[in-house]
Image (cartoon, rainbow, N blue to C red; front, top):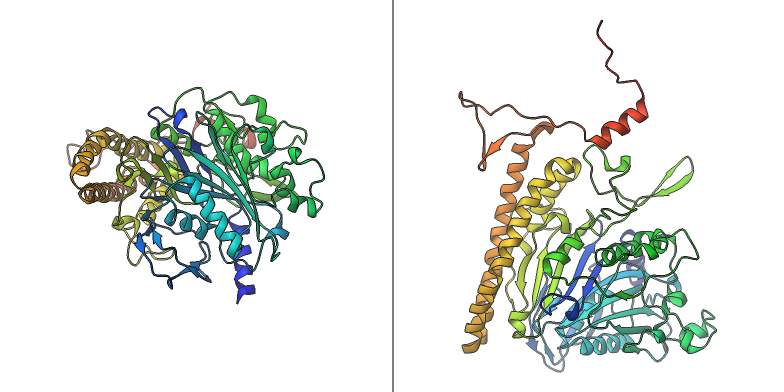
Length: 546
């Protein structure tokens, strides 16, 4: 059974390769002193909602089952912690947030007999930690005790004061050395990111706090993967050396995020991936402007716009200038391999979030997971407060799953809309964007008043504040999915048969006789017109009448 599970796990890892993105801003890099961390959970066929793990007090004999995050196969049991904390999504009641991206690394380092997978490890860390540092200690102690069965992973571990990157790999089933890891604190005022490529390099040069396993360097030395002095040790070059795809499909996403806040042309050759001598990117940069939730959302919706990797300059965009590409990312023509670009925003996102942590507020008010159930570009992020103990129905819908549609479920309703928009992107996306932005702007506008009221309640009764914010999050979630169902109906009426029905003041126009007003037919965009004629010459040229 264990062998069969590992085959399934490895197949899952391959199919989900080059998935997930985390963007990070420390408190000194944001407008109001929030810490902001994001996560795209990108996996083909993935169905997910908003997880909830209630806090509790447990008996000494209680055990916790480790159910694999990807395959849902049980790995067995470990002892339960005496006390666990409330977790909603990827944030807990103390404003600790944990996200991840998988980078793989050396296949021979995977411990096929380990107990804890990367996904279970995240939620164990959230249930058992009050700070980011405590989460690192909890997570590393667990895998050192019970083994780690996933491939190489980068974890974002953040709280209301600091952000750490933790990178981890197994030791190939070695009973004495179960895991190897290193954690780096991101200096305040900086931003960083990771996207399926190991990012920690020569950490002795970083000038920041570094915590590492005792065997961090010695294990690589024992395998012959590193032979220099300890100060010269480079984590990723020993355990997960960047390949062309690791740079072009993965590091390019980090490059694009950084490029919003700094001229990154110096590191473009690294992101392009083809020059073996290109200069590696820094682990973090200082942004040229302060960030907030709205700016982070914009970065999560990035498609390399305005850069040499932009997706609007070739026929892959289709007739309607779609900034997405079909997968797999590689394809063959006449025996040669080619590739598609892989931006941050992608169609296979199962869920996406921005976690906001604020040190000046009580934890249950200061922590928010801004959550969406689809491609970040195609959803409105709804604020879910970290003390919430009841999930909105649309993010936890009875009966809905990856092959069962429900119009009460956000994953399915959001995908219903986005999959109408993708094929006719430049025609239909402006309508989606208008609804998306109007919802999010209303959330931002109401945030202070809602939280002021929550603080008044908190001063008298913490539970009342939690209940108030939980009800608020549920109300917004219900409103969002209702608005999205209406958007789906609007889109099919507005853009039926590749035409556009005119409207005024939110109503479709009619003739005096009562039927729909004449439609407009926008036809090809300029790029497509020119590309078509370049390819076909005079084939479709209209002859002059004589």
